Amino acid sequence: MNWLIGAVLFLILAPITGGLIAGIDRKITARMQGRVGPPLLQPFYDVGKLFEKERAVVTTAQNFYVLAYLIFIALSGALFFAGGDLLLIVFAFTLAHVFLVLGAYAVHSPYSHVGAGRELIQLMAYEPMIILAAVGFYMVSGSFYVADIVTTTVPAILYLPGVFLGFAVILTIKLRKSPFDISTSHHAHQEIVKGITTEFSGSTLAQVEIAHWYENVFLLGFVFLFFAWNPVIGIVAVAITYLAEIFVDNVTARARWQAALKSGWLAAILGIVNLAILSYMMLGGA
Amino acid sequence: MAFLKRSPWILHYDASSCNGCDIEVLACLTPLYDVERFGIINTGNPKHADILMITGGINELNRAVVKNLYEQMPEPKVVVAIGICAATGGIFRECYNIAGGVDKVIPVDVYVPGCAARPEMIIDGVVKALGILEEKRAKMTGSAQAKEETRHAAEAGEST
Ligand code: SF4
Image (cartoon, rainbow over all chains, first blue to last red; front, top):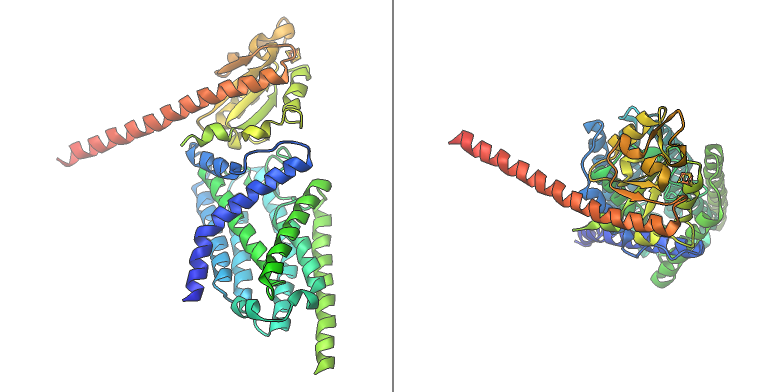
């Protein structure tokens, strides 16, 4: 029963939390730049506005793909909060982004295609690290199930500091933050038009935005797993991680895609070294 | 249900301005004026935009571009012409290549005078545009409803 409650709560609450986080993010970003910034509820106004606009569609296929993106993101998040299998979650998560890329490729627009290509590069950059994080949790807790990982009394962060750092790097990619916001960005609204979301407008764009909220909550939940042995520390750590991401977003300029790819894989190497040392220690202990 | 007024996204296009008005438009985004307070975002994408801000007059080369940009924006949308050049052609109006103000090609809803238009004036113009935007939205949903009703009525007529 518990798993069902977790999944349903996620599906209902995640858009609200995600939107609020986005609002806080924009506010803090504005303050860091010496501006007043938009109201806290601005992300909700934006999405509400997008639903009010005319439905200008280039190909109907793109709406279908974006809907699939939203559904699979929500599904992977729901599986996560239901305590499901981490590997399955990671694969559902990846599949969701493949749909987004397909949606962008469905339109004959060079801007949209450049964005889609860059999204694929991002996918290549962060995928190894996400899987390594899942493996790391398995080595610490002996299970791929989120439900088991959360209930372990072992402080995962002490065993997986390298994996955590690596994950923090790819989190920057995933949250679409500088220096790795190469496929589309919250800022810099004039570069390669709007990247992967160039050809989405109105309610389709709103769905992309809602999916992003789901995704952010899911990713922060993933960060929480590293600190799950103590929920209070966990929540504080998640907040600090997110603040650090905002900070990094504001003090760095966008990198080239080659740098994004290299950083993603360097993060993965960090993770692998961490896991190698960990397995060596475990063998030594046994 | 008036989200539109709270989240107007802007597309800024430099027709053939001297760049003076453009500097002032960009000044609105700086910390001093910070139009993001009102949810205003400067997007570079006509498909995401609600307000088209044009500086400078129409010349023979950008005529098609302006028209294209306008047509790519989804309804409801408004056009704000910034500066005297965008209103009438301004000091360039006698030039051999200038056709005149922006309203030679697309319908303009708000004219912001000045050479260059001051940021305060530009923000004022945008606020004015928001009212028009809201009117257009109401009309749009109204006409969509009316269309739906006539369709239903027609269907009901057919079935009997
Ligand atoms: S109105 Fe004046 S400042 Fe603005 S574009 Fe024309 S000449 Fe330049």
